Image 1 (cartoon, one colour):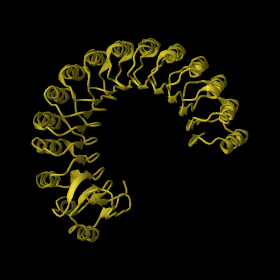
Image 2 (image 1 turned 90 degrees about the vertical axis):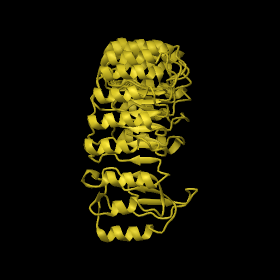
Image 3 (image 1 turned 180 degrees about the vertical axis):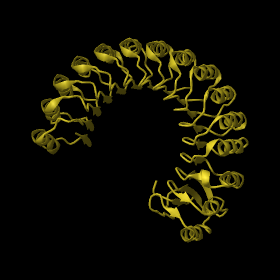
Length: 442
């Protein structure tokens, strides 16, 4: 972020002060004092954004503990706050003196476990803060247990980001246990924390009881088939979770089938990411079959799952029946031209899908031409990515020519090593006629 401090009036409609330092600037005493003198008499709500700044004096204490204005958001991303000796004391002072702070973003600050534990303990009795981001801070077991304890007492925090840390099953299981009692947290991000099956089972138990969590991100962990199956069983009865990310969790075919069984019963999940899980054709077919009857899921990312041609054909059959899915990412699945053709034919009759990513599937020239024929007929697709599909200039030219007639597509990604001057001229001619395309990559 380049904006250093933005101050607003009570309606948050007027920017009073906007100071823009160079990226990675060092806040020297002279600059710090100049800024402080400009701010010290202003009695307004303030949003502090000081990302990518290295603080080397007491300016941060002056800025954040000024009693003349009310802080409602603090964003200190990548500021190396671990080197600010009294940073936890500064945050404590803010929380004690300020009754309007609703968002605190301390991402990428190498806070480590001691400072993370202290910050978590400060929030136990806080009744104002609603959004906390502690991602990318090398937090460990002490912070995890402190957060679990904090969630027992805290009744206002709704969003918590703990992604990309060093937490493991023990402390995250403690957090899961807390969620059986906490009734305010609605969004939790635990992406990339080396979590395994036991954590999946602990959250499965929590989700049987918890009725407020609506967003859960378990991406890039190791829940594997057993952990995913446990969560899937719970989601047959859970009615609060609407967004789930379990990408890259080594769930394999068995996990894919468990997800499919869940989707046949669950009526609340609207967004699901199961990419990079190697569920293969069998898992893909199971999910596709379920989505013929599921009427709530609107966004599915099933990319990079080695589904092959058969998985693509199963997805195509599903799209003939499904009337709720609006966004589908099926990229990197080795569908080849036959799988691509099957999906293209379906999109001639499907009237709900608005965004499709079918990139990196070896569609080749024939697959590209099939997509082009679809664009003649389909009137609902607005975003299409078919990049890196070895379509050659002929396939690209055919798709581009179809956009002379298509009046709905606004985003198109044709990126790949196949354009030449002739294709460039065809694209240029199309852009002179087409009035709806707003983003084109090639």
